[in-house]
Image (tube, rainbow, N blue to C red; front, top):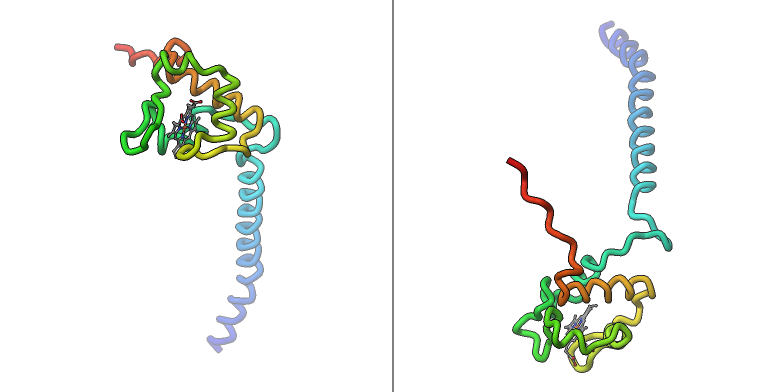
Length: 140
Ligand code: HEC
């Protein structure tokens, strides 16, 4: 007797349980669609950051500051204005694209925009006046 009552209660409850679950699945799907819609855009409008490219590809030898890590033999100091002023933009592009054997690898896959942004960023390492000013100190 009580079993029948229980199963009836269950039968009554199940559609709403199912609706509730379905609602959750739907919100999850909507959320997923929203998230994929907002992920990093691709294509020509994608924002390229010179600092990011440098950090990801160059800093392991040149250091985050560009001075060069002591354990990398022969690495050049990219913050040295005397040295850097002897290198044209074209030379920088060629050195990055083609590498500097035997140690510096080539980056032939860098697109034109990537190369342009990266060269501009490398310039800022030896020309502090090109760097963005630091954020103002917090007010009183
Ligand atoms: C595996 C270590 C390594 C990595 C990674 C590396 N470099 Fe170098 N880089 C070197 C060394 C060593 C030299 C000095 C070799 C030379 O000038 O012949 C050098 C030289 C340079 C020079 C001077 C080139 C010239 O024409 O005289 C520039 C500019 C430079 N690197 C930029 C970069 C940039 C930008 C990246 C990232 C895209 C990068 N390097 C990644 C090791 C590295």
